[in-house]
Image 1 (tube, rainbow, N blue to C red):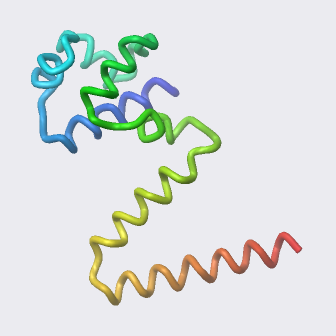
Image 2: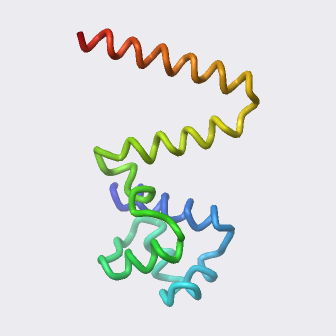
Length: 111
């Protein structure tokens, strides 16, 4: 299950760069087949290959592991911030007001 979530993030990072598996293989020296197995969650890269892959994807480990680590709130907050920034100003305002309200409710519940 974890490998599939990580594989999905690897694929998303590659697609964000606008490159194919073949392009990534050429860029990293890894095989297209290997990249495919990682993206499908059928294989998990060992440390050395993981570093090569992350560098080739021009991304951080946090962005790849954010779905499986318990302490990855900063990455998710950053992703949400980017998504909100792409919205029209009125939509941004409504969403931020809702988030602020939810934060206040959580703080009140903690008392």
